Length: 385
Image (tube, rainbow, N blue to C red; front, top):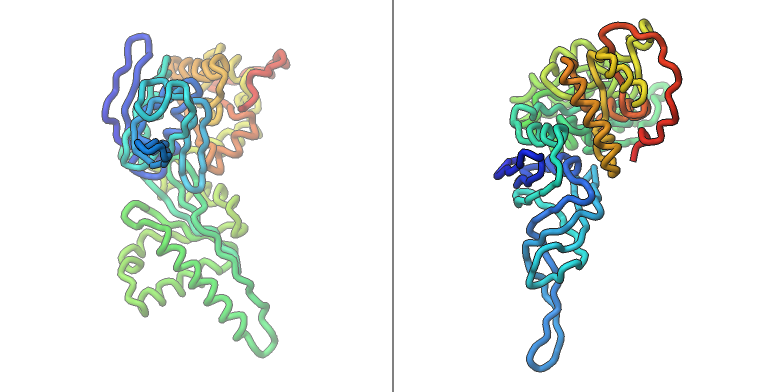
């Protein structure tokens, strides 16, 4: 993401102009947008024209519209973002108050205006525009006949390809059919890697499986790379890392990222940091439950006692459309930081973020024990959107 212009007043009102440069930037933009914001962007509008003879025709024209955001639709797999709203600025093609859907595009700037830019939103912009955040990781989680090729970026986990091939069992006296099917399977996984992994960006490719499937695949991969003279695979061989997993399903990714060897290799990635923080929380909950709280009301009370060392919170909570509820989460984050605590904002598109959502989206590791808090009053405002 490129920040082209930033104009925010002392009362935190103002606007920023950004240009998304890659698909992941659409996810950041989705987290920046809220209903009621003003969005100005280039878009295509179908316009009806009437000729001098009275015949009516239609054409598609590109124009710049400013809409008041009403609906936000994000496709996580295609990384496409559509925003629907009413036109709030004079335009020769679109009447004031008319509805229009803007699909934000890569390498095309947009301007977002808000009445209040809070600390969490401003941090999201810094993260999106910081090139050092781009420490991407790819993972091939596999077992015989099944492989999931996943791209782990700083903000999201994307399933890029799923390979399924039926592998017949070995038969007494003949393994030919079994071996041919395995070769077909390995070939499909290799093509998936070549098609979906950008070796210029990805720093590490984790290959994980139960048993020896990963070892057999790696042997096949580089045997074929030599035979086909695939320079891209041979040059990037050091990026591949073998890891054990209990299955070839996507949920095994959390288990893989918890491996100490993987954690050391990926120490500079946001996803690995999130997994470790959540693992630390669960350990604390098991061994010292008076130092591990979850649920908004309990975590807020711990914050009031200045006891929070690490706050774990899902970015899903900051997309809440109720301003009062959203402000409550922002206030919690600001309080923890002001009192010297660490805040980890989890992406809801990471495996760890999905798990944190099951804990109501917010948890905390405390500096010192606090006896079990009495059951808080009904806390309906902590519900997720």
